[in-house]
Image 1 (cartoon, helix red, strand yellow):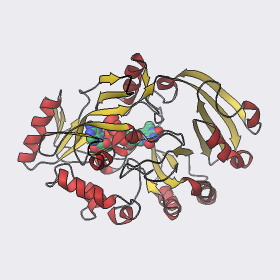
Image 2 (cartoon, protein in one colour):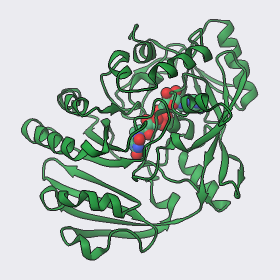
Image 3 (cartoon, rainbow, N blue to C red):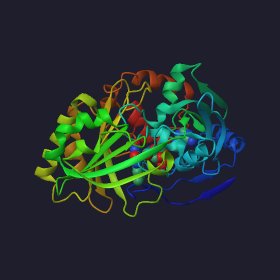
Image 4 (cartoon, rainbow, N blue to C red):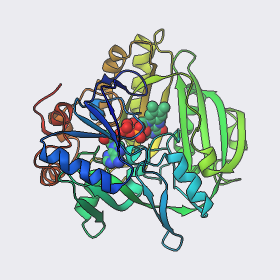
Length: 406
Ligand SMILES: Cc1cc2nc3c(=O)[nH]c(=O)nc-3n(C[C@H](O)[C@H](O)[C@H](O)COP(=O)(O)OP(=O)(O)OC[C@H]3O[C@@H](n4cnc5c(N)ncnc54)[C@H](O)[C@@H]3O)c2cc1C
């Protein structure tokens, strides 16, 4: 097995650095099983990394870091059932392309295609669309390597394990394969418009209702807004009804090509994102906007992003049991971000916000517990699956159990 030692590891944005004792890259499930069994016997701890795009310390370890980058590709598909099984190390963009080759498509993507599917699912990565769940909600089954180095299959035959596993940050086991709910491959037309908050904000509900996928960026310095509408070609809000905005882009292509960005972004950023109940989201956004204009307008070099996400039943999903809007604060990686994020975070919390697991936030178990109705059930399942804490770290203990922190 390919193994690196004494390599410093840094996440995508550069805000998280640590030195694992060992970075292991198994070639197949057999090698992974042996590795985890060995770690369990030797009282070692293991974290799993996808692409390393998360910026909370969920990946951090000074022991074993496992990457499934050698375990990629679509394993099988069933066009009648609209399901496909993919290896967990597959980059999301590759999943989309390989599915398209067999006339299938993912229901949605996040903004980029570079994450690995196990990592994207691991934190509830989502795109936009009031009827479309996050990627975790698209998982209908899979295989994982447990803390003792055995294979555990999970699917709807054990609904609680499925709902817990779908978003588990690698704490129940290491996914080797995920079975996804997919749809026939489809084309999407992307339209982008420029406008400003004053002119367009009264139209937000119409835009949510009329489009498969609507989101917008707000630029604090200029107060300008970019609206993105993604629909089946010819569908969505009529152009005539968008007289308050100027069309700046219109293109049509296959969904996997046009929904996510495929190239590495030139500039890095750090991000805080909270999931807000949809019916409170407009008010929350206006409060956030006011606070940023008062305190941060001169300091914020990047934008604020608003997206909708469908309700789901995944225990730790930020969209659990409620229609959701996510609001994200972005700040250039080379600029200070904590003071800015910490000034806005109480507004998100006052609206019942739940943080994105892979983006900056300050919450720990006591504050999280009250935000997740199935928190205790998730914890029981985690303790049953990993009683010795092979997949835990000080940060995850503080996050999920409420004791140690690093
Ligand atoms: C440029 C950029 C754009 C982004 N866009 C979006 C977006 O549009 N929407 C959104 O919601 N988020 C977005 N994010 C956040 C990002 O999607 C999440 O942080 C995601 O988890 C990253 O995937 P990854 O493959 O890098 O996983 P990592 O960050 O490496 O890992 C994430 C979690 O998954 C676990 N994990 C990884 N592989 C496995 C496995 N095989 N089995 C079990 N657990 C595993 C890890 O242990 C960890 O807990 C973005 C981040 C960046 C940097």
